[in-house]
Image 1 (cartoon, rainbow, N blue to C red):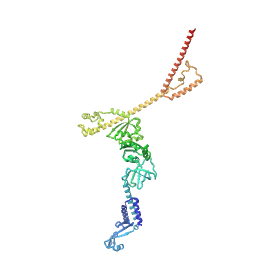
Image 2: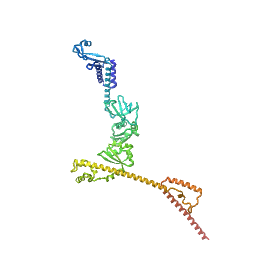
Image 3: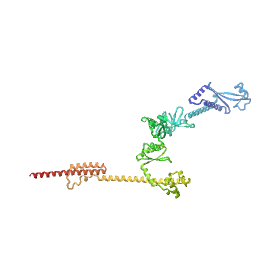
Image 4: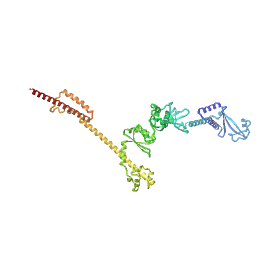
Length: 538
């Protein structure tokens, strides 16, 4: 039995990859604990393991005395000589114990201690193995799906993929292969030590590193990443080698490299842009495919106003504001979008709302003179000037500078509110004028349609008037049909075109009449000439 026990012990060492010495000490402690449950906590128990012979020995140690006062640690000389014939008073004897005599509960306790220690050792091994692999990609199979959370088998370890770290449109079943990025290794976790993610930005970076040799070698560097998992991502890349095209390397031949990453992320769109140290160039590239008309940076607040044409605004914003959000995250600048028309309108209003420094509450004539001498003529200029620069002016200390800055901030808030109100009024006025203009156009169109409406009277005139030629019934019917066809065609055309076409037809009709009258006059002149020739011959 002891041989089988030690064989099982060594198998645990091999399979679980646990340190043998640690496990031996654990085994000794567990057996000593089991013996203590049977013989009492004061009993002196020792365990000896002989690996060479494959033998396990458990001993209880007594002190030999003449009269026993504490039977848990003392033994009489007579009983001691039953164990060891040469035992003497004052010496110690070791009684060998049989593990089977410990009892069921004691053995079960030893088993629990040993199992617990094996688990702790295994967790320590996993922690030491994976603690330095945070940010790396691991691959495994789905072991269990519970309430959206996924437990992944990595071989000798297990990883936990929480629902919050999953791409929403992805679905996995037991046995499916899955790749994820390690985001945490917690030694004190109750369940799996390793936490992985499919939504982190490191996953995208590592996937490109695996697919693009230039990134793995260091010729191309990923500077920043902005990602909305499952929808769209933007990455900024920079080439450290002038002979290597950063974007082209990431895209690959016919898009093969980037397509491999897209397939791994189940169709997530990826925009690759060249990183630039020049902020204006970087922001412009990050907002692609929109074309930027102008940029205004506010470095104090890390904001940038991006000006685009009206037809580029929707492209710059993107679906549900996705493009501008990703561009802002990619560049690190807080991006505000405005159209050229809106910017011009705001500039005009800002010029109108410029407030002289004398008009700000609390500024005395003496203080105003000092500010003017320093080139601060308006409240807007005072608001943009830092407290340190104000304290450089003679006669302005820290308290005065802080008061001026606070008062300027309050005044600017009021001016900004006034600007927004004026801007809103202008927009409403413009929309109202546009609406009225459209209504007028509609009314004019209706009037034109009524004016050019073909009636029987406009077609035939006054048939009862003088010079009107009688019309036969057949001809009358054909005229009515042609009139209906022409009226239908004319109703389909704008009124103005109808008037112009009618004018053209009138001009053509006048030209025909002139030609016909000219031909009649020519015939009459020829007849008169022939009569004169006859008279001369007579």
